[in-house]
Image (tube, rainbow, N blue to C red; front, top):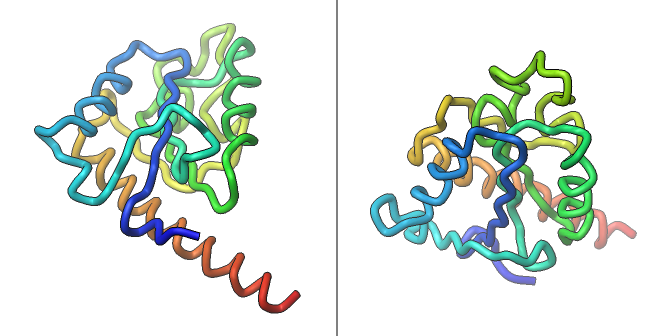
Length: 147
């Protein structure tokens, strides 16, 4: 089992958003904001990811996709809702096709609101998520030793 605090792998999914937060997540992963200084690596495979970054709201068309990505991730895992739409549905909350924020589909560990969310806020949320991930990892280890 690797030490996640040294290199957390993230997977990013953009739900039904305006793409503003999606672009900011990509900016946070670029050399300008240098999320790699925290060891953050972007992956396209949920089985390799420790942290699930979700932008955009949940609707009937993407709720199964969000759940499928989440279910493919190995425990422990952390979900970060990036942007106000991922947190609550945002400005699209009252639209006929919007169910709400990501927490309507899967459990969310870190909420990072903003419209559009700033790359610095995304990095802060990922760092907070690393702390949550370490707590979950410690709890799993304690549970395994107790069993």
